[in-house]
Image (cartoon, rainbow, N blue to C red; front, side, top):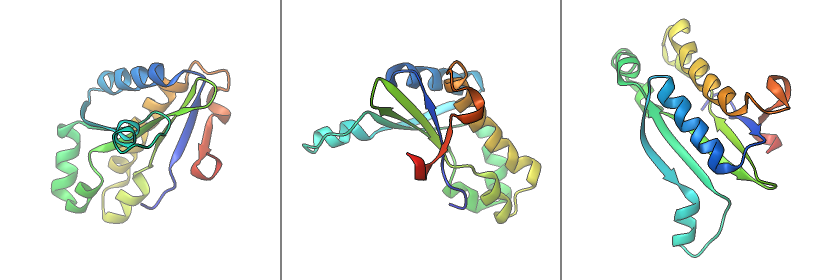
Length: 144
């Protein structure tokens, strides 16, 4: 992937953040196609890790035309968003910005930008009530 993941810290516990993100995806007219529960898989292998889920989501009416016009985008669709538990009953939401990579594949700039906009709106909904606000809740993966 071209762009580094963007991570948004919340003051909400993991379960509350997961519920907010799930609701925000639905409110954006999108469907959750799959949920990968990394913590559960770890437990089943005798390991432990904080709660960590990846939600695969999208809207076929938006994604299908892009994949038809630019087939390699199918490698990165549907979109993915990570919700992970942090110490102190906090959590984080992260995603890979897609616009730059999709533009490099040939997707028109305005169409590519819509993917980042929807991901950002979902993360902002999870963090919108956080006292850190929009100015400093974003951290790159190197700060996690």
